[in-house]
Picture 1 (cartoon, rainbow, N blue to C red):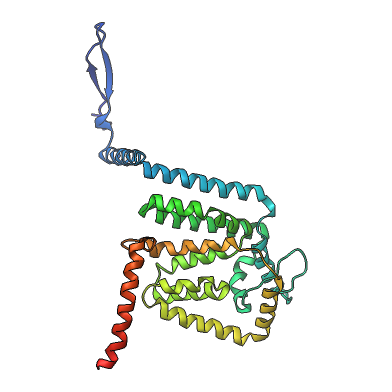
Picture 2: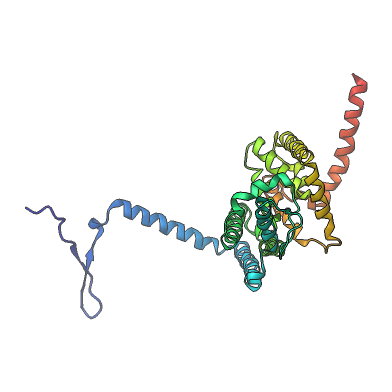
Length: 313
């Protein structure tokens, strides 16, 4: 007796018009059920994805995203080694500070570090890397996190997400080119929508104390994150007061750049509002005239109720 599996069965196939018959091998008994089940899952998933491509809106979303990614990628490739000037400023500033120098007045081909002095240790674990490695980690890590946020948004509203990404393609590309921290702060504000109130408030406070543009995101912080955000912002102010001599030097370096062009790269902060918008029942109702008419009626009525309520008591 042999323990080996029996040979495959030979199954005849009806002959053709010429009377010739064919014999095929039936392997159904030699493929385990788990393999057949996985193959069925793959087939169904493939059919589902193919059926989605028949939706004109999804096809338009894919085309828009492809064009946006191509634009960003072409800009990054064209710049080559010339990119990363802002990220290099953070990297060099920390290294100068670690060596006892002044990061706000660097020597060499570096832009000055212009953020709070107490934030320098936060950059240190990254800045101790060699520049080529640090720049790779900075850019690739940012791209991966950005793609994750785009994936989250695309799964919920494909075409809307594609339109927003296409509009913000230039700000995305500009920040990825220079290595400016705007995009990282945008992702921090994005993460504040998915964390607890303490961490969410901390992320908002750090982003706000670095750029101030994220201050508007306080309006959309979830729950108690608003209170925690103000508390962490007070801590940030206190730390800057404690390091007041360096803070004064920081302000001098910050405002010493003179006139600047319009900062279109700041438009990237609009991306941080996407989680809040997508979680609303009607995200873009503010674009309709009827919504503004309803607000014009509701807001005065609410104010009248709040004014007359204490008088009634």
